[in-house]
Image (cartoon, rainbow, N blue to C red; front, side, top):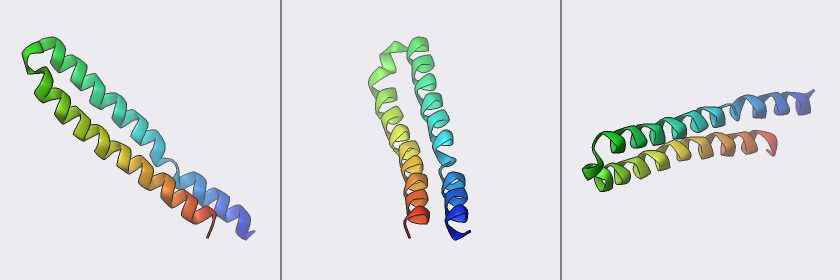
Amino acid sequence: MLQASKYIGAGLASAGLSGAGVGIGLVFQGLLTATARNPSLRSSLFSTAILSFSLVEATGLFSIMLSFLILYS
């Protein structure tokens, strides 16, 4: 029973990975749209997009870390 609840909890905790995938897609969609509208701001937009990408990716990594903690503790 305990093992089954760990699997359920780990599955629910890893649901944040889907949000991270959607967030990364939205970040780069915004980058492509903004670059298409104003190509001269590409370098400024790219650095902001990379920062946003790292923050969204960190959220996904935190959710998978929590999932592993639930599973193996």
